[in-house]
Length: 366
Image (cartoon, rainbow, N blue to C red):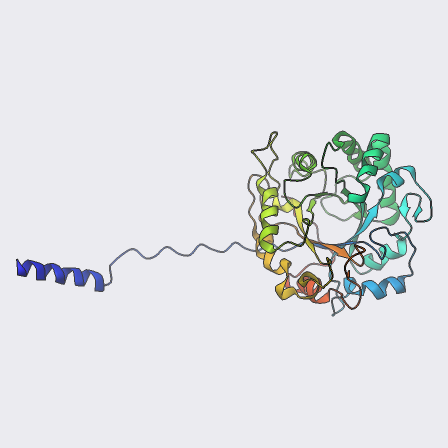
């Protein structure tokens, strides 16, 4: 009995101290390759809280916005600027008053557009915004086709693209918006090459899938498909307040996944068909997204943005990139991005770290 115990003890000792001749461990999963960022842009609210109501000299404009075209080494900090906002009802009626000329804010001049395009930065005009939601409704009801034609004419005249920012959360006029898009595309057909700036037509959707649901469902299902594209891409807008990388990613993942539990469901969106919005100006102190890339949301979120896998739509991993809200004076509260609170160290440093191409290349299509 004692010998048996001793033998058992010896065998147990050998088993626990002698390396087992087991199969080699499984190799670590390969890291997903990072897809290059293609869109790295800023919405721009001018010096009057997104009204753009005054003609500005280029030298004065440059004194407040030079960081956008020079991150410190002569290269732009962004490859896209979206001038925000055009009132859709004023555009339809070609209003001329103290702040508007033929339906376009007086500050959105060819000289300001050229300030950016001469440096390789693409320019778009944003039609709408939350302030003009009722005016979107009124303009679409009055003559959606003519509105699309007039937006196309402005794009031709200024050499810019158009962004649709229609923030009607309840009962949006989707038939009217379809007519607007059809009329615009009749003048400026979809151009996958991106060679014609005026052919760039995009739409804003919520940060995730739980607001602007009807608009998002229509856009994802009909206008942002990879097989029959109508709009170039969507911007997942900023959330109600500055968000962390993790909360931003959770919102963006909703677009990738869709909402199959909704009735009717929201289909998944291809990662190559949208950007993610991040604040650069909010509140009373500079944000890292503007001034300190090392601690910024865009740095923390970049691995996700560059590798998120399709989940039912699209064939390639990675979103198109980032959009930043918003340059110069987006609000009557807060400091904006004017000197001394300019964004070379955050947004500009991100352009370098992420090797953002200027000018913007042809975008991934799937």
